[in-house]
Image (tube, rainbow, N blue to C red; front, side, top):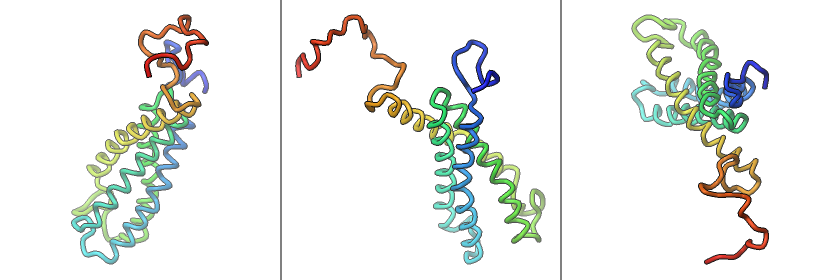
Amino acid sequence: MDARSEPAGGAGPTVDPVAALRGALAGLAVIVPVTVAAAVVDRWVTDLEDSAWSVPFTLAILAAYLVAGLRAGLDAPTAPLTNGALAGVGAVALWIPVRVAIWAVRESDRGLVSGDDPALPAGELFGNVVLAAVVGMAGALLGARRARRRDNGDGGEPAGRPRHGFDRAEERPDSTGQGAG
């Protein structure tokens, strides 16, 4: 971490650019094959958007955003929401050149962002950005939780969150294993 990623109060890092980029690349690694598979299926289906094929492809894209957030949350468990949202949105941003390349190869008769049936409509892009941010944050929460358990070594309570009313000074080594149970 560098000084630019530290918040004013010194509470810890908020944005980890490496974690966000690694998450975005992980999401892109899922999005690219899904997009290519959708383009192949689109050749054989009359209307892909209105067919049953749209459901698994949509779920796969949402899974890609979850993977992006999960990777960011694992790498930056101290600020999972910020990094997860950035990873999800970053995956969409990295996907845009892939989508433009597919359009250039397959759909030269359609407009890219304009016309009756654009290949990359602004509303669809905005919807993907919002979904990527939200699902990326959910994935990051899962990743951060897993990272905390991994760092704790016991799979128990996350580090830094002691039990309510727990005082370490009152714990005695000879009390291990005693009690009702």
